[in-house]
Image (tube, helix red, strand yellow):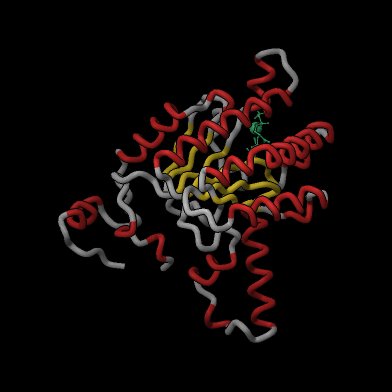
Length: 259
Ligand code: IPE
Ligand code: IPE
Ligand code: MG
């Protein structure tokens, strides 16, 4: 069994170690104000700054933000271009600040879909912040959960073909190691703003035992107080990982759980 599904590894009364957010509702936020959708994306970046700051202060280990899905290319070309420009300009303005705040930046997704300029900027931003030890900020861009699992399988198949992986070694832990989130704890708390209650191809494998929290608030209006509410909801839940509620209570009283 993958170690992160070990219920003794984390108690929901603690703060979540890893929060994953689908930042949805930028377009509707702008449309409600009779503004073009792109204004909603700009306002969304401001909300990102607030939430990153909040998580860094609270000592959260990992914050993963879904910025652009592998399906978002289906949007009108104009909006896609604007989102790419915004991604590049935000990286340009924010990386030094992240670095000063000891934040490690990690971009997950299929980079081959981006311009050379953006790919280079991503590489530099990650390198600049690689040794930081505070919050790990994961930005999912051109990311899809199915893409992630597919690229892991492709690498494992290649490993089997060149005999660096024995077929019998394929396990949940091995697959974990080939996902783009390798080395990170699994998300404890998943939040989606904007009112939709779906996963939209975010971290499919990694969300197996994550607690879900949905809010109607549109992403540009999301702030530290709302994140605090989501965390409070998380802390009030009992995570059972397949055990019974009684077993979990016994575990709190010092009895070991069956793995
Ligand atoms: C989320 O907001 C941002 C991206 C997907 C890039 P949307 O742009 O999906 O906003 P709505 O859902 O149309 O309101
Ligand atoms: C999910 O939002 C992706 C991001 C927030 C980046 P979408 O707005 O693309 O999701 P759907 O299409 O409503 O499921
Ligand atoms: Mg949306």
